[in-house]
Length: 423
Image 1 (cartoon, one colour):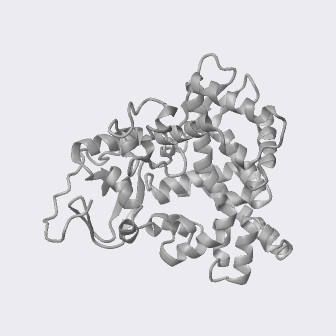
Image 2: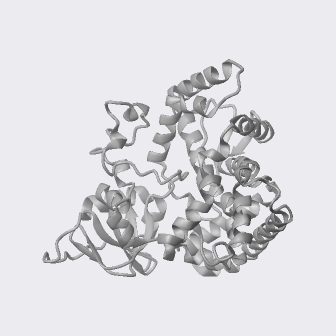
Image 3: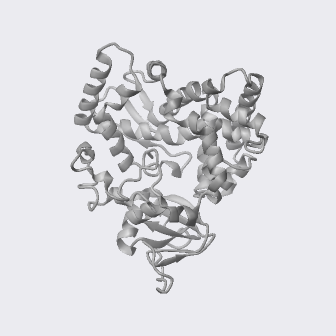
């Protein structure tokens, strides 16, 4: 993974691209296929040119292990990656953009609200929300924009469980703001001029309006809920009132609306990809239906333990996240000079980390293009190989879904009573 100081640094190859655009078109079309091809041709370290900018990539199982190692945490930082979003909100920091002690403090503050404890004993409530939304938004025989409808479902679930309300009238604004901020300010795939779009400005103003409403409501009822019963946003407001240095006023909009942004970008894409994958494989659908029939057949309330005993559903979700990872590559900046696989990475360099490359390699996953639940069962357990499985929390549908604010990807199946479109 690393080399001694006396070993000469290797010359890092650059992936061949076209003038000006570099590899932007190929990478935008299918980032997973692009990064795997580049890894096969150039090894674990190479450079890519995107719209006139050259960036170093480290990829493969060793890169995934390095990312999660102590050395990796010391050499790579995430703050620079998220700084554009933080600035756009007028905030000072965010949980995903903090490193070191600052990250630990914010993580501890939000640990309970984001953990499984937040839904402990509330599975029946989540099921009631889900049933209500499906009855309302998923009519048999209709055309359903899957990602969008999943976003509404996630908003209602997160809203009622984590924030106490479901601001459905703001979902379209959160969707648009998230898309523009991620494309322009985080992944930097689009020019900043897009932020002058009146539609974006309106959406941004609306999200700030939501944040202000949430903050005002939480201030008005601060102290009324016992600490052990507080939900996520109540913990955040309590910290703001008691320790304004930890959660200053200018951070409240970003922090309070953060659960919606996270859910719309990750959970909704995960579940949408899951729907796509399961419906594409009738034999998997049959297994999941059988589990659901058994789970709900008794008529007894469903608990967290019951949900954990769904192997086909769990493996189908894991396989979805392997084939449709939320981020084919992660982005970090070098916190100091370091070496990886004999190549020198300079302090301050932006680095793409291709942690999901093994997902698409037969060396790690037999017939990697195949949707196969048995690969997670023992003794196979292919995902347990060091550095092989890095689903990064959720799934992207389809591979380039983040690339454009306007494009739609139609995906339909014959024989289904509902037509599906990805948007």
